[in-house]
Image 1: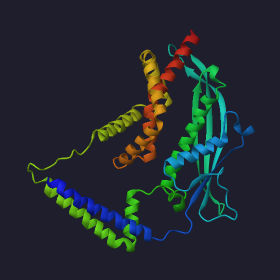
Image 2: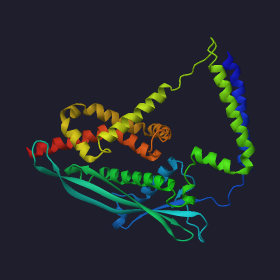
Image 3: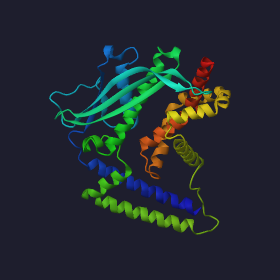
Image 4: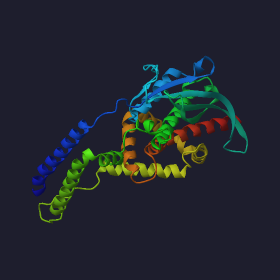
Length: 356
């Protein structure tokens, strides 16, 4: 009862604080030119890498991945023309597909010390950030990915494209981490969504926001004091709210399980995948239908899972030294681990039969 009486006061106070914040924000002068990033993808590979590589789709994919990470003012060269003369604070992200190569690599057989040769498709990407105005190169990032395939899959384009888009994901993750560290300068860093601590720091540094900061601090103090008084009264009207709901517990367990798997598999290495498939091949193949159904469900629910990954990552960075992108990458690798091991088990079985 008492808490229900307190609720209107809390809501009214919060509303007043938010209204004041909005007013202050609207009164803050905006910069004449905001930084923007234009992504341009190209390759020197003959015929633009076709049919394996769709260079235009790769460019769109990288832009979409940056937008999904809330990068502001990012666009594709397909829809945005590089201004001439250059506009200040315009940056060009040059995405290059440097190499695509099919190789044959020996893999150890299951039952003996012999080796069987399998195909591997590897791709190397690079992302160079340039200041369009000065022409200065601010930095270059590189990403590589490989995908193993069966002998009869040598001409299977989708199998090869898995490696291309995996490398693109790694490039995007590297860009987020490097930009967050300021490796490309403050303008490029400002393209990233501001962290809560950055927002608070910018408000505190601005003298115009001092009255609002003081008001918000006093308001928060009053809310905390009143809540403590009501919650500690110990009478029959006290309402005890659980500190963590079921969703929070599930998120924490998912994060803990993914971190444990990352440590146990040496960061989801190929060697650990081979060992897992080798040691439990029969059990894994017996569960093939279950694992394939789970992978299909994961692919169909990928957008919701991305939202979940970002929610978990936003809390995880407060608990450990990992970046948000590193946590997201870890969660994705953990979710696809069983399917990776299944494919490896299938390859090992086929090599064993072929060798026999």
